[in-house]
Length: 488
Image (tube, rainbow, N blue to C red; front, side):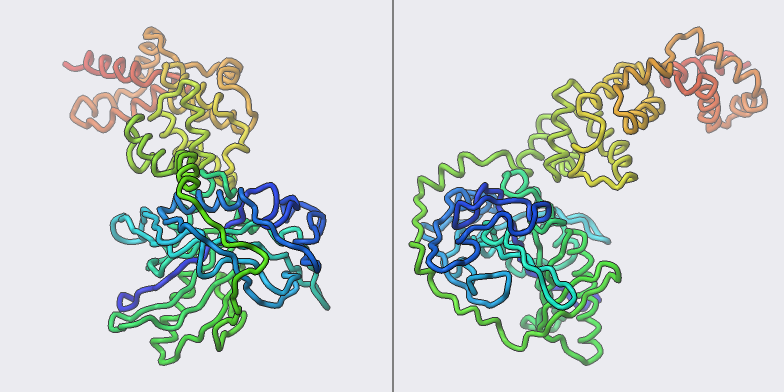
């Protein structure tokens, strides 16, 4: 395996969150939830005599993405006809961009955590980002196929990388970073399960003795970033086995069988696709003035990298903690709301990334869906303030958090109803400590004889005697004082 290196280029298709379609005023709807063929018009149906009109907002959204990916925005871009005949394209061609795309020559720096070895930063170059219209949706049934044109004509931005990706881990890191950028920009919601964001890796492998690339394959219609990772792993291994056995890889389009965790060959490609691109005669060349570009640039929101650096600089978070918190926009928003309600930045980060994420994982709730949980940011902040203020210790606070997760109640209400407030009364604590030591004379003697590790066990007994509600700092001080008093 060490003699081989994956060579991967990624194609990403992102539907843009405009109100209307790419070339008409027809509204954009949720193509999964909406009834079939209820958001169509003569243009998206490709009826004779219709003329397309460019959606300005789609152009600006595309420019935003290009600028966020460090791309150049050429002064002129042009739409072209991409010919292919399939039922989901009623015109018999797709309006796309070919030799004059919207954005070119960009890059994204991603932080990669490999399965073995140290984390590192990798620059993935962006070859181009171009606009086109999405196709309709086919549903295959016995004896035929059903077609829904709700999605036909929706603005689609295709982002193409250079073949700079050399592992499944790098592809995963790029996918997560790109999805976060699109979400922060507000141009795509990142829901791969609904097909609004689609990633398709082009995969080949290169032996250490090779001087040029080998035959590549393309995996289509991956519905999660994790499946991108798995598909690349599987296809890389498949290709290496073929080459090492003396066989060869044939250029093909592949699918991913999630149930069997393997790639499936859908069709072999003996020749390159013949799309017969030519300039779209019904649309003019689009001039993009430098003033327009700068106006779009000025309106860019704070992006993940900038937010991460701010969290490190202003809040004192570690680079790792800040990176985790900004990776999903919903998580970053929740975290900042927690802080706005008075929580300590480091406590909030620790509790979110520890206890709260654990609860979400156990209940199979993705981090990007954090706003769906019953615990509001205000309630979470209130819990943290009870901990930092000494009302609750960590163990009791975890119990309260679990109750909040189930009921959605405020932490103060739960603490009062269940009598969970932390015991800080020195008299009560000293009495509990004395009782524990009197009942465990041998352990006390062993500790005084030099077995220092027994202190933790006695501390646990004292906390148990206090119902888990003792202030750990006060209990520790009382326990050490009582033990010191017993030294002869």
